[in-house]
Image (cartoon, rainbow, N blue to C red; front, top):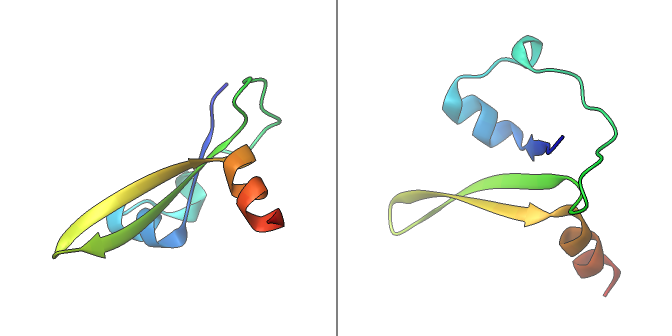
Length: 61
């Protein structure tokens, strides 16, 4: 199952409370987990999605 792990900023923006979230499980997707972050550019809210493997690769550089 594909999982999207969101930052607190996204959860707050969507009005989702911690108790409403399901527990995370080990992924069986070839792509791994995905991470989402919210930021603003030109007064627009933008959500960026990054693959777990990409995030780890960037941190190790």
